[in-house]
Each structure stands twice: as structure tokens, then as C-alpha cells.
Amino acid sequence: MAIDVELLKSIPYFSGLSPAELDSIKEFIFERTAESGDLILLEGEPADAMYFVASGVVKTFKTSADGKEQILSFVRPGEAFNDVPVFDGGPNPASVQAIGPVVLYGIRNSDLEVILRDHPQVSLNVTRVLSQQVRHLVSLVEDLSFRHVIARVAKILLEHASDGTGPRPKLTQQEMAAMAGTAREMVGRSLKSLEDEGAIRL
Image (tube, rainbow, N blue to C red; front, side, top):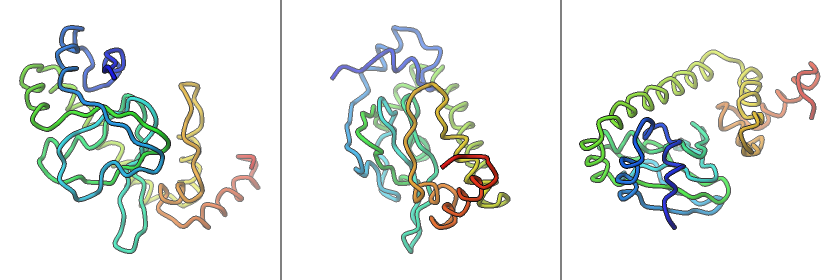
């Protein structure tokens, strides 16, 4: 399947590039598909490529030794994942799983080096994208450290409500618990409390 140049234009990594530059970068991109529930990357394994979501949604998450899951983010069309290890040479920092059918665009490590050398604008864009990721992780640490569970649940609801830009993945209480760093039962109680306060309707 042909790589969609219009989609490439919407990816922050390639912001500000000319049509000719996008066409040359397109030659380095490969496509990969996954079905709902498929594990795309496993935490700790060697990283050989970074990915962009072309369609669908994936989640990035960490898993503790006792099997507890902490969801770090949901990655939607135009957004990237597994970019950090491609730059620092380390292993995959988190596991990635498909939420429904997904189409991914990938760039291998060696090809990314060529792109960065030939297109300086991409290097500038990288700093902006990685800075946004740091802000997201700092916000996540703040939530887990300083917010009560009910506040974390309320924030998750706000962030994943439809904003008119397209469908959002429907979260289960277990997924919300994995995002909020708590147990599913606590999410259920928090939702009931929010309903009692008139903030939401179940």
C-alpha cells in the first residue's frame, strides 16, 4: 500500500517540509499492520525502528514484576511512539499494544540517521516532539504523586471525552485503573462519587 504523503504532512516530525522533501522521506518508510490486542513492541527488547500511527490507536504501557500495568499514553493517528530508543540506542522503554486494527508507518534506525542528516528541519522538529513527551511524563508523575484517585479519574474522563476531531477509544474501568495507577474497584467507586456529585451520568 502506498504511503500517504498527506498523512506525513500532519506528523509533527515532518512539519515544515516541502513536498519534495516529503517525497524523499517517503522512500524510507515501511508499513506495518496489527489487529486488536496484538503486541507490537515488548518492553526491554532491542529497538530497531520508530513508528507513527497512520490509522487506529495503540497504547504504550509498563508492566511491573507482579503483572500490574501502568498505561503511559494512547497514541493516535499522526503521533509517534518508540522514538526515544532510536535516538539513544537503548531497548524499548515500554510495551505497545493495538487497540483495534491499526496501520503503522515505521522508520528503521539507520534510515532515520540519513533523514536527520539530509533534512535539518526534522532535527528541529525532533526537539519539539521530545520536549512535549517530557511534559506529558512530568504531568503523569504529578498526577500519580499528588492527585487523589477521584481527581485522576476525572482528569482521564476529561482528556478522553470526544472533542469533535474523531472517535476516541472507549476505556474500560480496568484500562482507566491502569492509567490512574490504582485498582479497578477504586475507579468504580470514583465514578460513583462523581455521579453522586452530579459531575457525570452513568
